[in-house]
Length: 65
Image 1 (spheres, rainbow, N blue to C red):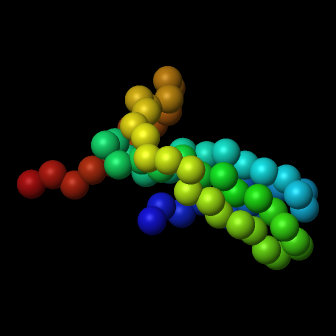
Image 2 (image 1 turned 45 degrees about the vertical axis):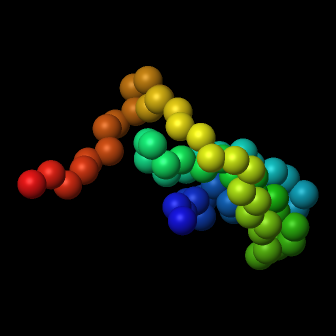
């Protein structure tokens, strides 16, 4: 399971929601994160997906033999 940087979660107000896609192609997951308290969040998996990389984003380094 992919992680979401704490800075994104902390930026939410209680009741705030964050939609984010995590993972690397071809295995990516759409998540909805809702802040329900000062130090409590709910993480819901919405669906599996595959998206192209964002334009201008640094490529992810991969291990190759």
